[in-house]
Image (cartoon, rainbow, N blue to C red):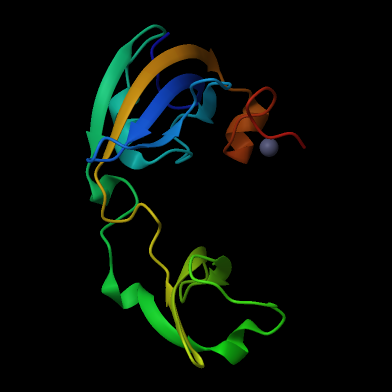
Length: 161
Ligand SMILES: [Zn+2]
């Protein structure tokens, strides 16, 4: 059965950036299992997988707009240290959860520390990057009604709850 909406799909994948560095990979671990059509994976990769079947291998280059977005300088801001009450020691590279103006949770990364000023970056760490995926389709099955209702897969490789 080819990949389509409401299929639970297992893939082996390796993700590299344009410099050829491996950013993420399922190699040596379990395949990634996702619910197709539910936005579980980045749009560019989901689109490329439509109609593929078990055993198919593909190489997909996903532009930032179909991955984690363009890098936006507007998402970089300077906050006061007092905003980080309860954190013992701030360090460059630390990540925090914050709520964006639209109410979505986002991860912000500390980029710079200067006296009382803390420069934070709300861009996704992979924003602005073209992502190169090497993918092999390992398994495809119909998702259960419950999985479709939840918008994610259950069981092996999925949510346990
Ligand atoms: Zn669920």
